[in-house]
Image 1 (cartoon, rainbow over the protein chains, first blue to last red):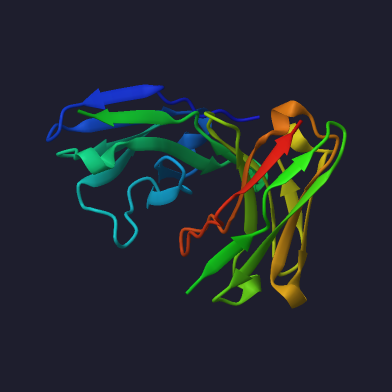
Image 2: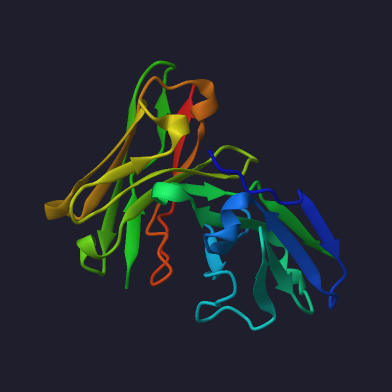
Length: 107
Length: 115
């Protein structure tokens, strides 16, 4: 089976840049997506194909990729960005896998 | 607008089975695959499997192989997740989702409690 590894938590002050990493061998050959989840809500897609942003997602949220690591960057983080963030990739034979999730605190 | 509406909360005894439904509307049902993702209390998202809504082909996570069955009824635009031999660790919110970059839609979640 495949694994995606994320830090359990990241903390920044408002206006600072938050970076959340996701590592896994599968990322060298498969795209990653990022989901934002706020308490009691379903996840929301914020990045796909490593760095593409769906319509309606703020430009301060971006993604990048290098080798077996993808990074979600939130520039000028705001209080409303506080949430859990999950990376996801579809491994071989279309089996999906999520990372363990990162709690982003903005305070 | 696209909606995925799931069935309500369930309470099951250990060893029992549960079947959760996911009714799609606002699009042609066979356009998107339907994936099932679960989240135990305070835990991360966990991918369980998916079904090609057009031809009915399925793929399951190795973790749930043998215990999970995903089906669909195209006439009702509804997908189903059945999980058997339930144990306390299966207590979670179960989500259906299209998980598609061209259209990422999620159901509201169905809480399954095993106790």
